[in-house]
Length: 256
Ligand code: ADP
Ligand code: MG
Image (tube, rainbow, N blue to C red; front, top):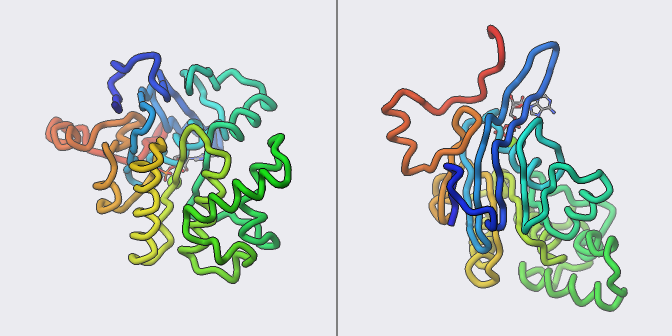
């Protein structure tokens, strides 16, 4: 079950407390996340929404160990990641996190097969085992017949499916998706969503996804809005609005 009020148990798969993130730019402080709490269990499918600049990408980067918070703690499957060394964090990330970004981030000079194999090069798997895992992952996303294609020979939807294959090939603890359908036409977006839903329902994957698309968010177990640096459940947002805490982008410190 997903909770944002700090009431979740410390044994949640993802357990975030008092998460704070400040950026400094030109002498100005930007307080993006302000004491954010979040608990996510194995198999949950969470959608994050919020205006541009509200901190959605910042939050995913922190959860994926790509950036470090200014304060607070992030515990995943019992590992507190906020104090890990860079080396340990890289290893942790390879084992636990699958990333799917809006821009596909595929390496243009590598084939679909080679792109998906990349995360496995960090593991101890043999070449034969790697091939088996890559073929399985490309099969899951329906691209068994495109393994030797280069990214430029694929459609946007197919490229995003390769990204998903790369994200799941090492069987990570959870997937972080940042507007995975944002750059796609409606039909491709629907296909990608159907695929992510299959991963959640059939393969019991834990998925945390940023989206602007209400249709996409509707398919998630819960939609959380970033509101003044913290998370609010969509169903409770209307109430919050009535109390005058309207959803806004991040307010920077000092006069604007
Ligand atoms: P979203 O993904 O919701 O659009 P972001 O997390 O990308 O928002 O950004 C939140 C705020 O933090 C924005 O005001 C953005 O300009 C600022 N920000 C993000 N990354 C940095 C950075 N590396 N340095 C300074 N400011 C940043
Ligand atoms: Mg973003």
